[in-house]
Amino acid sequence: MEAEGRCSSSSPCDTVITAAEELEAHVKDCYSLMPGIDLPAAVNSIRATSPSGRSAVATVPWYGDATEAVLAAGPTGLARYEVEVCLNFPEGFTCEGQTYESLFQLLRARGCRAVLCA
Image 1 (cartoon, rainbow, N blue to C red):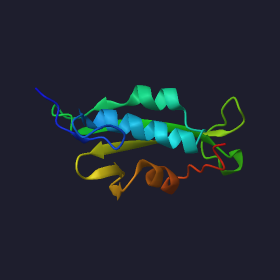
Image 2: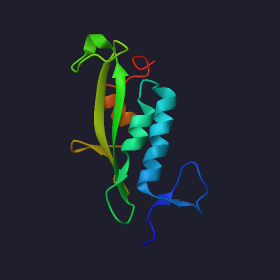
Image 3: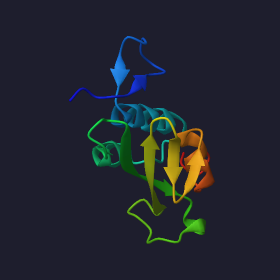
Image 4: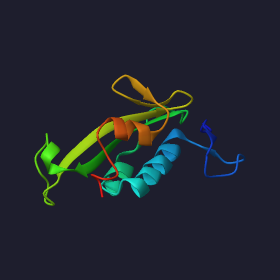
């Protein structure tokens, strides 16, 4: 079955991509602004959730300021956080019933900060 998707913001419109591919691109973009994200773990967790390729889910972990720790401190002394995100075409990014315009906006709302993740 041919994957349904949409044109990527980073590729020509004759290239149709799946939600999983789009989610990976967004995770990598967020990592460039929030280097505390555990990029390999986030990318490796991405999985399609529909045969058509129109939705995907990932667990995005990051390390943050230990003073805000709610989880056990990692080897760096920073707390490890994570959030499960879903990308659906055309709805967008969702997490725990909330819809966000971008993955960056979702991660910021969940506590990942460029300053804390640096």
